[in-house]
Length: 263
Image 1 (cartoon, helix red, strand yellow):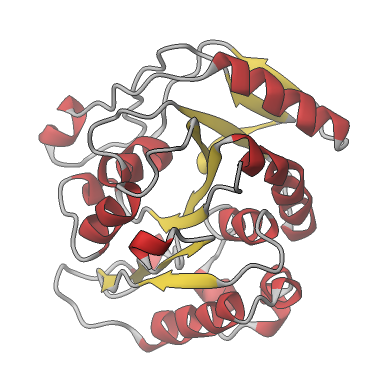
Image 2 (cartoon, helix red, strand yellow):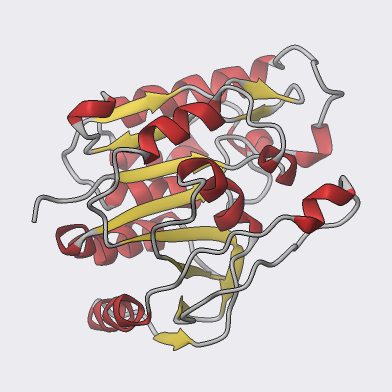
């Protein structure tokens, strides 16, 4: 089987589920090209564990792991099935790569998974399962995690790193605010490095990127990008523009190994 694509999706705020903006329709178009996938694997910053856990539920529930938003958000669900067989295979691959990995049989979908999946496959017609992020994951560990997951692409799995191109929630602006310069400059730097295939710089972004610590006061929403890039070594990436919401939340996303029909 030809390797399936890898995606990095900026999932922004939970409101992305109700406000698709420009990224939502682009994800739906991309998702329509994934019919031959056996499953979608999502790495989300909203599931962090001491080691690595793999979601093994046959029918995961929907977790509303946020507060203070539009009441309609709490009525939404994403009724995709899981894939216990591929979850077990993934745990075995991770263990073989040196990670302390186990299957977690009851975990549901957090919003880092179900919010972008509502746009990528709105019919919830592909199995979806998650891989947790170790709490002490750093950039080097994210590279190792992406490389460990990469063989699944040859087995019919689409790998999705779900995070955020920028994620400084302390600086959220009112809706319709113009983009703040630092967010635009950081997103442009990262985008250039992704398109150049420069994994070394992406992993060392804290030292090399402009405004890195301001764009990401903590790293958990950036590291899924490194996981995704490491799962597609040497492959050409395509930018999926998402704009900047609330002044500082860049929604730019990427796909590696993009199907010809979506290019």
